[in-house]
Structures are given as structure tokens and as C-alpha cells.
Amino acid sequence: MNLEKEQRYVRFVEMIENLMGYKEQILQDRIPRHIAIIMDGNGRWAKRQGMARMFGHRQGVETVHRITEAAAELGIEYLTLYAFSTENWNRPKEEVDALMALLVDTIAKETPTLMKNNIRLQTIGDISRLPQATHDKFVACIEQTNQNTGLTLVIALSYSARWELIQAARQIAQAVQHSKMLVEDINEETISAHLTTRDMPDPDLLIRTSGELRISNFLLWQLAYAELYFTDCLWPEFTEEEFYHAIVDYQHRERRFGKTSEQVR
Ligand code: IPE
Ligand code: IPE
Ligand code: MG
Image (cartoon, rainbow, N blue to C red):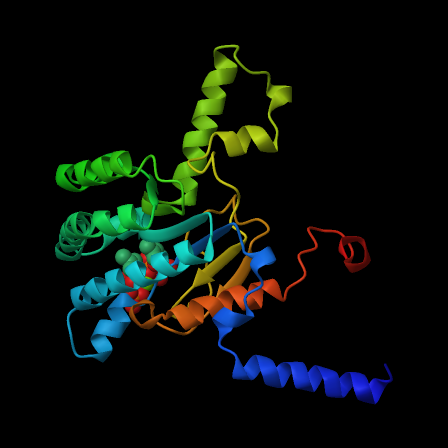
């Protein structure tokens, strides 16, 4: 093809893509195995409506419902949602209490949807810090959905990457102390195997809503080679279309893992 023809062809493809929705543009053979999301902006969204922060959190649950169903339908294997960080325990007590109560209601309401969509629930984080009722509801739902074989929905609750890495360091140190492991044998696999995500592939794509450009103590080890996607959209108004857009964007990137472009093509 000469240059002019090629440019015309590229413009033609772009025009077709613009006419299609993002969902239709998703390449089925390049679906990310694991998507992680920092769901941010509930409070700001509520404030914009002149409402209390909890109104935003409740609306945020609706987004979780929609995006989880969309991920399951696309055949994504793991969806990890950052719902409550170790640092979030420092928020005003009323907000923490209300969030914990919201989690209990949500689990009760959403368990049938998880069963219907063949979704398995898991959590990562220090769930021993949760109030008893919240803790028990999660454990029960994890058990109930344990045999489901579709999407694994991982809720990061009372989670932070530094907390997780400290736990891993302690466990490894104990193994060495009890002569179950040699210091020379500690490698990448050893660390990964002692993290809460030990049975999961690393995230391929990280999405953060609300325009903040930071990781906020989320999956620091596991995100080493994730593709990052930031959007200004606040979590309660994050749509399926925006989710598909993030996936299409991801699929257009070249993941080189330190190699050259020529090597990976
Ligand atoms: C994210 O929304 C949800 C949680 C951290 C629990 P925020 O509550 O952080 O909302 P903003 O960032 O204040 O708008
Ligand atoms: C990150 O959101 C944690 C969750 C989404 C659960 P925050 O709103 O707590 O993050 P920072 O404090 O603004 O970085
Ligand atoms: Mg926030």
C-alpha cells in the first residue's frame, strides 16, 4: 500500500471505530485476566448533589453491581475492587460505622446476583478488624459462592499493600527461623506465595476513578507491570461504557516487560 492509501485506510478504520461502541471494539482474544479498580470519588459525587457522603457510597454500590456483571459477561477471570483501605479506618467514626453497615446490607442483597452469575466472592485484607456482623456476612457469602466457576470477585477490605508485605515478611522470617526455608531460596515466587493474592495472576489493568493519580497503598507488589488507566469520572457515575473504554485502551498498548518492541512483536 502506498502512504496515501494507508492513511486513508487508517482514517476509515478510525471512522468505523467511532461509530461502534467500545464494547464492540473489545478483542475477545486479548481480554485482561485480572482487572483491579480503585473505586474513588463517592464523597465528592454526593457533595455535588448537595447530599451526605453516605449517599455517594450507596450509589457506589450500584456501580459495583453493574461493573461486576459487565466483567462476568466479558469472561474476565478476576476483578479486584478496593473497597476499604487500612488508612480508611482513620475516617470519622460515623462514616466507618455506616460503611460497615452498608457492607452487611450489600452482601445480603447481592448474594443471589453472585449465584445467578456464577461469581465466586473472595476478600483480601485484614478482615479480623471488621465488626463481627460484617465479618460473618462476608465469610458466609465466600462459603456460599465457593463452588462458582465464573468470575472471581475480590473485595479488598481493610487492605493495604504495606500491611500485606509486613505479614509476608513475618511469615518468611518465621519459616527461616524454624529452618523450613533457606535465606538463599527466597525469590519472587516466595514473596508472591506469601501475599493475600497468592492464588491469583497479577492485575493486567488498574483503573482508578475520580481523577486522583496515585496508588494509595493498593497491591504495590502485584501492580509492578500492570497497565494504568485513570479517569476523572467519579465512581458512582462510572459506566459500563467507560469500563469497556478502559479495556479497549489496554488492548491497544504494547506490554514490553522490559524487552524491546521488536522482541515482543
Ligand atoms: C471511595 O470514595 C470509597 C472509599 C474510600 C470507601 P471516597 O469516600 O474516597 O470519596 P472521595 O474521594 O472523598 O470523593
Ligand atoms: C483509596 O481511596 C481507597 C479506596 C478506594 C478504598 P481513598 O479516597 O481512601 O484514597 P486517598 O486517601 O485519597 O489516597
Ligand atoms: Mg477518596
